[in-house]
Image (tube, rainbow over all chains, first blue to last red; front, side, top):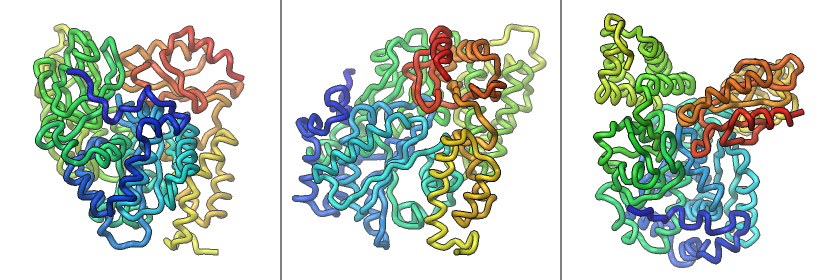
Length: 405
Length: 148
């Protein structure tokens, strides 16, 4: 299936340093339409009817999030663009920011108008520091053309912390604190940044807004599946001939992306959604990419037949244990215990009882962790036990003497 | 002067400045000495434990002296699949230190970092805030030799 470039429509076409090239392709037409022809409530209704769901991994309905913030009490509200993109194997936001910062600025301005916010922040991960000038330039050119009105957009940089991609840790980071996850409720649209109503949206989510405003909700909700409307941008890496960024209609099959577009061969498994994503074995490559089945933020890492499952899961867990903020015991202790067990399996020193511990611990972490990191950390373990159990069994100590799988 | 840790809106305004100030200091001095953290705590009316807590949370901040050039090789899975191990070994060979160490002459610090979002051009690294991609041992040698 060919790509459908809605989010990426300007990428590689316009000059990201010159706003005029964006204007030539309809840039800021949506903003003009929104301000001239729509009330904030109408904008929010349009986004709700479109069915747009968050593109940063959680898939929360965008229109609903905006509506909650609109209705919340408070004179000062905030729009935050989450450009922290720390999930392993995810580089689609980087790609978008590099090539079309103007559409993002336009979307944030529309969001500000919709919820009644005068201030927007782009939280940019420190690893994307090299994009700072490009973004500042886009904001300043939009301001010079009068497109921002009374809306101010400021950029706040991270300092190297994966957990700051989690929305509540992100807010703590902007507040100058350790990036620790907050207890919810209250949720950001009622009490967010400095306790004020806040919406936090992923870069890609925002990139959809202008086209929805221009073409209408019904145009958007006819694309995709029943519960996953529109397109999704994927970043493909690993054992593929054509790594890169691809945009597909939601519901497209994993095989179309991995074999059809990225030209992978002899695939053993695919990790969809990054470190906290799912592991899909080759036999299940016809699984549709959608919120109803498997999705995540867009990371698609491909492993060929030479790759070792245990090694992959172990490395993934090491990453999660290191990046865990430490606030809750299930996250902090759970990831450490999983690392310790997986390390022993990687050396062929596993035990039967270890598998039971991994399974019980997975249930506990999924139920009781404070945030998505702890809740989803067991995913690679659960999936690899389900689809590649033999890899674990061959590494159990009593079985030593044979070839390690 | 507000009381330390009083949770007032002023403290919030001050706290907001903490991370940007620490980043500035990191950039200027190469690390965050204890005295600097104490001064910052006083000027922002924050408990020094807060300042220390933030300084030690973020991986791009360091409370120990670092080299003039900080090498951060990505060790995450997509870079691992593109043989970052060879790149790590070539850095070790080129400058004679292992990850976590600083050269005695203060020229380099060598760290391993997690996914920097350059997976389509792996293996990759950051060097003083700049990203270098499609690394080979030859490129490493070239890039590092050019560092002051």
